[in-house]
Amino acid sequence: MTLNMETVRAVACTPLFGLTLTIGSYLLSIWVFRKFGEFPLLNPVLTAAIPVVAVIYYLPIDYSNYANSTELLSLLLGTTTVSLSIPLYRHLPTIHSEIPAIISALLAGSTVAPASAIVIAWLTGGNNETLLSVAPKSITTPIAMAVSECIGGLASITAGTVISVSVFGAIVTAPLLRMLRIDNQAVLGFTLGLSAHGLGTAKAFEYSPIAGAFACLGLALTGALTSIAMPLIYHTLL
Picture (cartoon, rainbow, N blue to C red):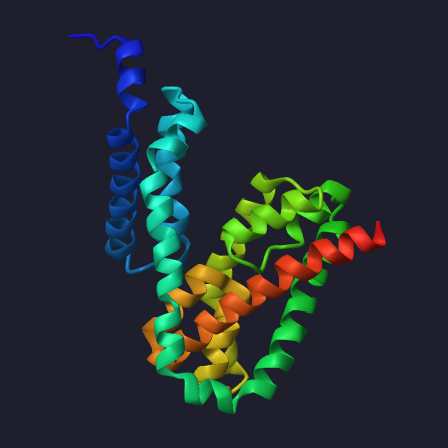
């Protein structure tokens, strides 16, 4: 029996379809990730988007309908973000003892990250819009997209850049620190949170609770500082 495409599209626009597609794609990506020995380039955060994009493109489905059908996941994402304050509270004494180092690392990382992205994009021939789109690459995706739009970048380029940087940072940070003979869990965690945001924070919890707590701190402080400073600097210079 041949299915009517209009019927398929109507079903595809229902909230249940969007939720099922998103969760199913993520579960499938986790299975593939584990099946191939957790190969870094098959990270579920990266590969889960492929089936979703394919279905939206080939049916086709209006993206706004899909976004509306998955609002529940966005709500849960906000709740999950707030819950990151729990490990921070549990390790507050340790964090207090490292405040000077935290401030230094935050200022250095928040300056070098956008500057390096802008320089690399400029050297490879990127136009002004591209430079502004990649500048907020080291803060978590929702904040980065908002900052990008505020300074005249393209949110779509920003989102892709942030996800790519997150995957890359989660892969190389720990081996790089080992090469430098740095085994401090606080340093590892803060570096992962600052440079690889959400995915880096999840990776940090795999190493230790201390690394996870400092990753939460790096994620939050970098996002807050960049979201305030970058639009301010851009509009002041403009």
